[in-house]
Amino acid sequence: MAYVIAEPCIGTKDTACVDACPVDCIHPKKDSEKYATEEMLYIDPVECIDCGACVPVCPVAAIFTLEDLPEKWQHFAEINASYAVGGKFQQDKFQKRVAQGAHVEQEVAPR
Ligand code: SF4
Image (cartoon, rainbow, N blue to C red; front, side, top):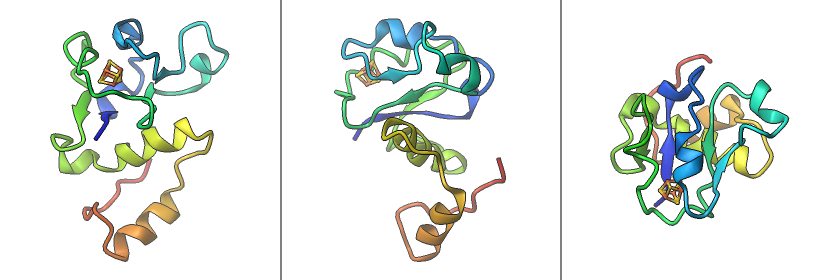
């Protein structure tokens, strides 16, 4: 599993979750150069230990377990993971996988 940060974080980037996370797996941090240029924060799905500490501190309720992630925000699982590996979310590839029957089945809204 792993927790996922979804759309409500865009433009919010509160970082209370960063302070709450015991394993430091939410990025970018406020003192990082990338904080200014990224539109939201992301959880590294490999490092996340599923403790849930970030959920109650988020002022915009942007953090979900994978199971509870609303259908319309399923693509944020991929967006969070892409950031962690240093890549960018590639909408084309994502939609191709969806078309091939990957776990996410709803249409991805243009970003
Ligand atoms: Fe960090 Fe726990 Fe939230 Fe995972 S669930 S991002 S480990 S605070």
